Image (cartoon, rainbow, N blue to C red; front, top):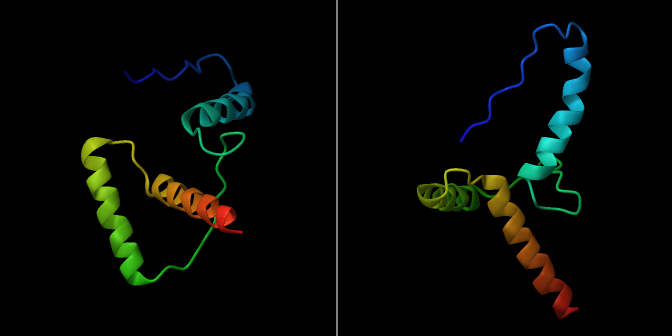
Length: 89
């Protein structure tokens, strides 16, 4: 069930300064990947065929899980690759 947003009536300018702590706390609860649960944006250039495959896998996963994100799929793939490559060394 969706949470109701907190009431901002009567908070004045304080509403702009207290939200960031609440948003950071909510972000760490929603994204369990990584050490602290926070995600960092990174840009990579991929071949078009790989992007098409990612799109197809993402659509298939969204059929079962509406919260599926491309970022999660890429993170899972990178973690699996890095774990397997570190074992090979």
